[in-house]
Every structure is written in structure tokens, then in C-alpha cells.
Length: 193
Image (cartoon, rainbow, N blue to C red; front, side, top):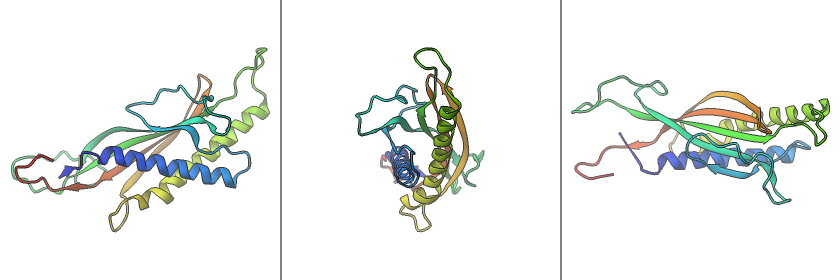
């Protein structure tokens, strides 16, 4: 089955929009919780950790939210990769499973200007923000992302591993993996996609 040329990028944009919206909702519900970061974008490849400490106008939330496409595999039994021989006149019901990484970075407590390590209160506040962010990213996938497909049963996907990344370079955050069954269409006879 063939893919629309834009489906990979459009799916990444849907993931980004869902996570950003859920972060905003969560910030309104949880006192002291930052919302969607000022830097939010779909990036090519693994994101650079270059904007978790600010660079935003005073009215916006510092941080960095990115979604990147990690790769794809053929699948006849989603989400497992198929090892079936393709080509010729095979009529296998092969779809495409695409993996994405959602990365949310915030400032990590670090040494003060006079060289003192972060206090327990600063560490605890950062840990709380990180835990609330983890739940918000998870909720975005469970509650928003399924409705982004026009398919009758909604978007088909598998939530992968969520892990904490950092602290490193003043940043700490979450990386969430998700594998999505991309919509496909039959190959047109003798016509390019």
C-alpha cells in the first residue's frame, strides 16, 4: 500500500498539537505548572537541546517541545515488522508503522552564581513539574491523538516507552515513543503518487 507524500509530517504535526494543547490544559489545572513551551516544532532527526532555558518573550513559557520521525517499517500485523516477501503480484495486507519521538525539555536546577548546588526545594519543584509533564504527555496520546484520524475507529497507534532524559546542559525532560499505523492507499496503475 502506498503512502501520501505528506502523511509522515502531518502525523508529527498532529502529535505536536495534541501534546501542546494538553500541556496548556494541565497548566490551567495545576498551580505552578508551566504550559506549552515557547519553542514547539517538528524537527528532523534527534532534537538539539538548545532552548530549554529561555529565549522566549516574558509572556511565554521557557522550554522546548519537539516531535521527530524516527523511522518506519512494513507491517501486516501492526505494530510488528513484517518479514514477508513483497513485490510481484503479492496481495499481502501490508501497512506502514511509523515511529515518532516526542521530547519535552524544561530547565533543570543547577549551580547558583556563587557555585552552590540546587536546594532540595528547587530539586523537588523540578521533579514535580517533570512528573506532571509526564502525565500530560501520556494523556495527550490517550485522549487527543486518537481523534486526529478520519478513520471510523480513530487513529491506530501503540504508546511506547516513556523515559526521563537529563539532566544535562541545564535541561531535563521526557522522551515519549509512539508507533502509528499510517493510512495508506492502493498504488495507482502506471501513475506516480
